[in-house]
Length: 489
Image (cartoon, rainbow, N blue to C red; front, side, top):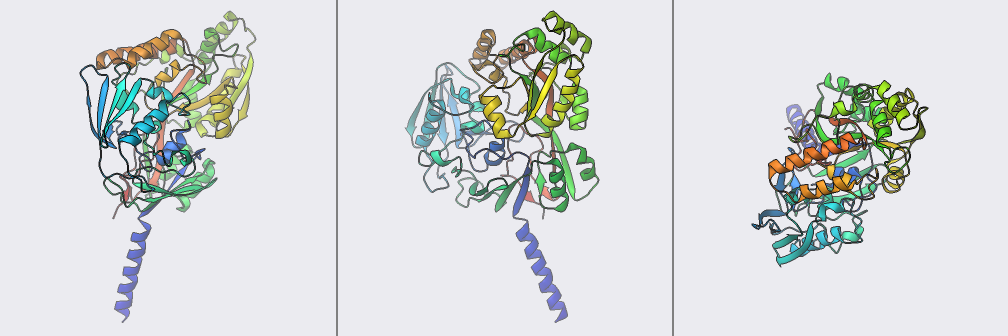
């Protein structure tokens, strides 16, 4: 009887362990302002819903490749003006409504409409018409050739939504993805469960919880206590050495698309003067910020482009650390005694910690900044939309997004006509060699004009339970894609 009891107990423990290993709890530092990726700029939205709840015609893979998603395949006309997408069959939205070409037309027309609130509306600017050819085929006609269309449609801002549920996606997201939204306890967590009616390959996880922990110390404590299974972008790099020494954890270090910048309000005096902007850039020691704020994790950059991209040009020498030259430039611009402005810092550690270091470096050349720590929602409202700031620090984690410098009214207020023309030409060019040349010209222009002070490419520093498999090492887009995540048996 004793042997039988031990056997039953062992079986019960094994069953319990298996039950525990069908779910995952992930930590995130920022809570999304809403859950609709087509209606707000916050990257935290995509970190929760991209590839999990919502899907687009195309998607990014873990290596940055553009892959089929709700579109099985596509063809391009000889003149490059018409893309014909063939859609998957049998897909449904989480509320039971069928997915078809009409949903594609609705989503793209909505994103590019005059009154669109899509934060990346420029992605759809080249679309002249969206035509439903059949329930499983849709034709997108462009106003000019755009070889980047499949890439643009892979962004979270281009996911397909249903007309029946689109209005409520901010709080009750309804997509076609492998997970369904279950609950959002604001200030604490978002929960999702496996979509058993998913059209594609079933995911291994039955449920997932995204837990919001803004404080780095609390994030460390939660991981060590086992309250979290993973923190894909861990906010306290100084603690990584402790996780590396603990066999219960894997430290996952990769690259991101995050160009971390000291953004400058180019529409505000004296930052509308290129000499002043260069003086600011020359006052900053990038490596000391990487070492002091990021504990050595990060790659110095001299323009708004990812170093791992083949088209990247190293332009760091154009704004090399040179405090003496910085003072000379300020005097030449008419500010021998420097000036005073604001430095508004959102919650991420790279901003708050980096901001203190930058403020001290700027003080050395006579520039005084008033540091204002702001919450993410306030940053979006006052800085991103309201342009009420002098300096701010933010990491632009969207993939290959140098085109934002051509946007009229964008928060750093640049949009030089020559740069706009360059980006227009880039979008109309499909030849890879010609595209590389144009991208390098664009990098050079914004670096020479010191539109912003370019700091470093954000590293992806994650921590996970050593038994977890399938988490992304790199971040080609803002996402915690759980479609390939499972527990080791």
